[in-house]
Structures are given as C-alpha cells and as structure tokens.
Image (cartoon, rainbow, N blue to C red; front, side, top):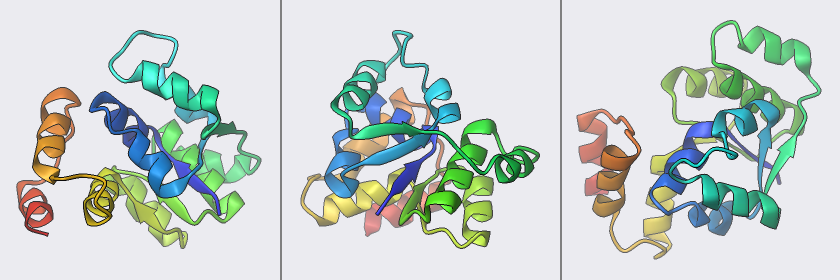
Length: 160
C-alpha cells in the first residue's frame, strides 16, 4: 500500500522534529525525483539531517515517475514536485498522497486520489496518542517552518 509525498509534508515535519510521525503512520514513504531535488538534502538546512537519515534508513524511498506525459500535463499548472508526486500516486495507485498546497490537493482529488497533509497527519497522531497536544507543533510549524494555514481552519483543527 504505497504512500507518496510531496515536498512540504516531509520538509515541514522534519523542521519541527516530527518526521517520525510519517514513518509511524505509513511505514514507508515514496517520493519522486523532483521532490528529492526540492528537499535539497545535501545542503545544511533545518530538517535536512533527519530527512537524510530517513532516506538512508530506507523508509523514505525515491521512485522514478514512468508516466511522464501525465507529469508534463500536471506541470502546466502545478510545481514540479507536486506534479510528479501526483503522477507517481496515480501510477502506483497510492493509498495516500501527502500534499498541503490547495491547488495540488484539488487536482489529486479530481484524479481519484486520497489526500492528506501535515494537519491530517498531526490530527491522526493526536488521536493515536503519538502527540500530547497539537498547539505546540502547530506553533512551531508557523514560527520555524513558515507554514501557512487559514485562521478558521487552524481554529477548527485545534478544537478537534
């Protein structure tokens, strides 16, 4: 049951030291080459060390997109990482596609993919007892990772 991720969920969770939540919830995460490029793991940036470790450990794996025509069509409206992540998800009939950007989520859903993002991962972690509280992690995402979330959605998430 493959799970494919775009850049944002991996990078932002790594920045706030919560990357392990992806492994706990999904086991293995597949990423296309464009996402690997966007993660810039060879640069010393916040989160890059834990991403390198996850790739070395093998629970984040890079996969080549074979459906290049679909990826090219998607790249007309989405960034390269999102386009390849969605194309790979379609190809592999992924159980989940991890995306945060609104437009990418809309396109993925229109192609019949099941989508979740950082907030979905955090909510599930809270429900499973892997996180004591959402507020500190969400605050860190906003402060350290520059994560953007609509205030009404944030309020809704925190009251769940």
